[in-house]
Image (cartoon, rainbow, N blue to C red; front, side, top):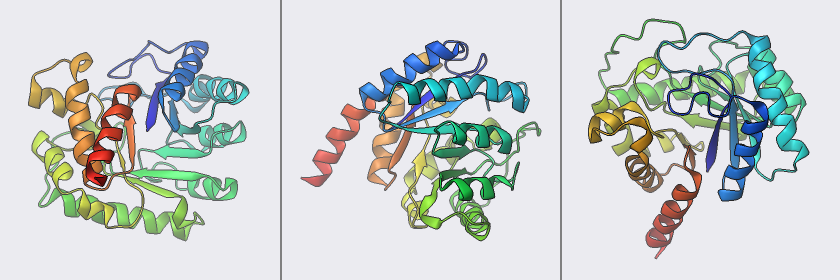
Amino acid sequence: MMGVVNVTPDSFSDGGRYFDPRQAAVHGLELAAQGAGILDVGGESTRPGADPVQAEEESRRVVPVIEALVSAGVGAQISVDTMKASVAQRALAVGATLVNDVTALRAAPELAEIVAAAGADICLMHMRHMPGEPTGRARYEDVVSEVKSFLEERLAFAVAHGVAEERVILDPGFGGGSFGKSTAENLELLRRLPELTAIGRPLLVGTSRKGFLGEVTGRAVSDRLAATIATNVIAYAGGATIFRVHDVAAHCDALRTTAAALAG
């Protein structure tokens, strides 16, 4: 389970709630105690219309949180959610061991060498629109095939630039906005997830509280836990192994039960 630690004033779900680094670190420790094996610390929102954050400010937000988590002896792996090479380098220097790059090394190709030199892990996400680009509805002939081709190409790029293949995690990029997928396309990705797990790398799924769940259920952002759990149960059955969520304890119970039932 990957617990979300947003050190931002404007994230779509909990923006501002943990903007203070001390509060963010406490929240991270709580998520780890609930069962998170990874803590994803991010200092820049990817929601549509979010203001870009300069590297110095992003580092100022995330580095103290990572330092505090390390000092507290947190047992979870620490991930830094960034597309910027300098932010990733600082985060890795103070104890992060995973870089979660929503642009899949397109914003900062040099990040591959930084990750390789650190012996760190990296998550490469499919995002149709780069941050800051207009987010008009993307047109897919076959959303799953196109996402698969993108992830295979980005995996090959990372390996060619020194990242060990076993260090790479892939993320199909669930969501609208910059992620460029309609509700129907998000649901199709979920149904056909085994086609993506066939690439042979661990698959990370990040559906937590997202807008397409609101379209399906009519629920507000704060009331999408049940819908999120449903998507992650389906994703687990489809072969996903990492689940990026805001509500760790509930997901641990749901997926532990799912695993027991499917193993029986």
